[in-house]
Amino acid sequence: MRVVTMLAKVDEEKCIGCKICQKVCPPLAIEVVNKVSRVDAEKCRGCGNCNQRCPENAVTMVKRETPIRVYVDPATVSREKIEELCEKARMNPEQIVCYCTATRAEEVAAAIIKGADTPEKISLETGVRTGCKVECIQPVLRLLEAAGIEPERPEGYQWYGRTPTIWEIPEEVKQKYSQRGFYFDEDIKLLNEVAKLKAEKEAR
Ligand code: SF4
Ligand code: SF4
Image 1 (cartoon, rainbow, N blue to C red):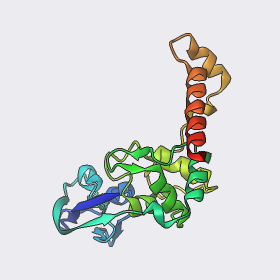
Image 2 (cartoon, rainbow, N blue to C red; image 1 turned 30 degrees about the vertical axis):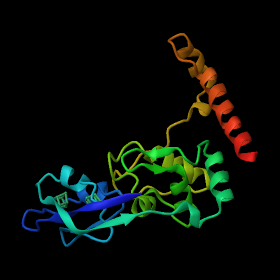
Image 3 (cartoon, rainbow, N blue to C red; image 1 turned 90 degrees about the vertical axis):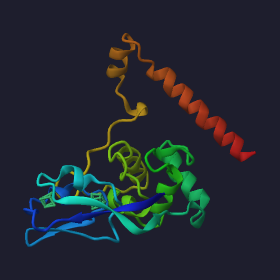
């Protein structure tokens, strides 16, 4: 969930149409037309990425007259489906997946169940990836993968491939790092135990 209070405004006199802003906008709110950047005010989530990356300082962040709230209510979809999806992604539905916006896994799962099939649509609907723009792409990709969705990367450098989770680390890597103070197998055991206890508690 995000309350969007800011809006990106482009100074057309300064814009050179380089498209950097278009490539880094998480909800795809920017389109460069005739070498001028245009921001869709309905879609802008006020993250400031365009403002920070524009080489010409052509983008200013201004306060919205009326803030907009973006949120997908998990109560509007089947709880069973949310739990199934989160379990496949090895996540707790209540865990926070985007700390900047305090968005939980269940909200992202609900957005996916309702049809959001790309990280960009999920950003637009829930606000994730519009804070630091870095950390939450991994849980978003994991939840999409759990739903059987392999999103296509938009043109440019929007996001990166999914990194391995602890359950996927190859045996030789585990062996190598076990002598350097890493405890992968112990961590896996602990995480599995926590998930089992939680499932048992919910079944009661
Ligand atoms: S990054 Fe700046 S100069 Fe480049 S298209 Fe966007 S607003 Fe224009
Ligand atoms: S969402 Fe972020 S990058 Fe996109 S237009 Fe708004 S402030 Fe710029």
